[in-house]
Length: 187
Image 1 (cartoon, rainbow, N blue to C red):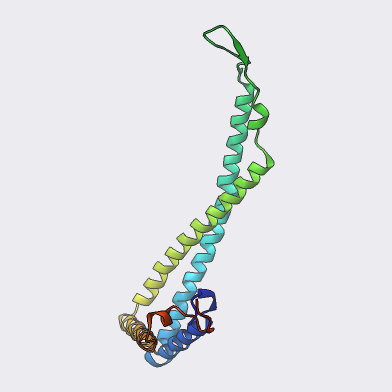
Image 2 (tube, rainbow, N blue to C red):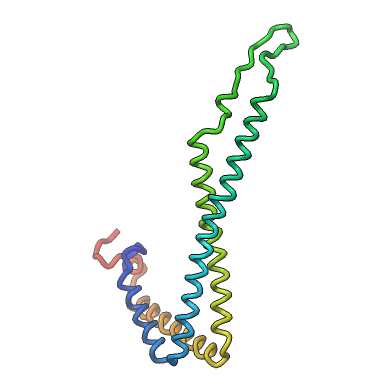
């Protein structure tokens, strides 16, 4: 097994095969259909939540923030601003006009739309994932016997994964071998 997650494809293929074996041997066809339906609900909810979050982030939040920034700038521009500061010792210093530096810019607008869309994307996706998980749980819980079989199959899968992990760890005699990659390179 390699030390980088990106190169652990063989391990994930083994786990996928093991999961397929448990799906085929421990569950009935109706249980497998229930699991596929539940998995589809999670994906559907996550996609819808992502799209809604992205839309809310761009259309509502970012556009409102830009409108508020423009309104505040217009109000700031209309205010009477001081042109000089008079100190206690009698000297005066000019105050620079910062109006142009405070004006909303295209780069600021682009950053606003980008970050609000990114935030909406993540928040909407996570909320969709949570609602999809709740919906999937309800789908599985409809039939108590199927739920029990699915839970038992998952526990059996976890036991088999842990047995493989134990074999892997027992097969390596030294602590140095645990951290060494399969490519033969030693660090």
